[in-house]
Image (cartoon, rainbow, N blue to C red; front, side, top):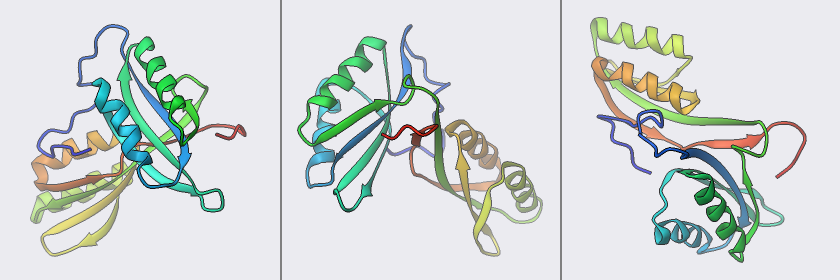
Length: 183
């Protein structure tokens, strides 16, 4: 999902219809060619939007991948999405982490900021407050690495704009349920 660096959109800034909520959905699938295209096709074919999408292999022996996606909709739409995902052949399990109990969600971002003098010092001070790490530095720029909630990353990026924000790369949301229950 591409984000406009000049104006990242926080879920709080988007006006949702009454009853609409953001949901984080985890899907365990076979790690084979075309599976991601089928999942995305399900969304695009029905006009559903994906706010965030992350895919990675999680079991090399069983050849399984985990898709974590964030979408929005009314309770009925979310139930339709989950039911349609469960019907796809390569899908093993679907979990709505938003309603299935407590979960942990994080996102990673690399943020490039150009600046000298006071702006450079201020960007380092703010990065320290947000616990962002400097992973690259030149005489005129920094690349910060930061993990946290989407809102935390959005807030940091907003503060970097007047200080010389150049570029942003984000992973999207990864999430896992809390406790001992497996997917």
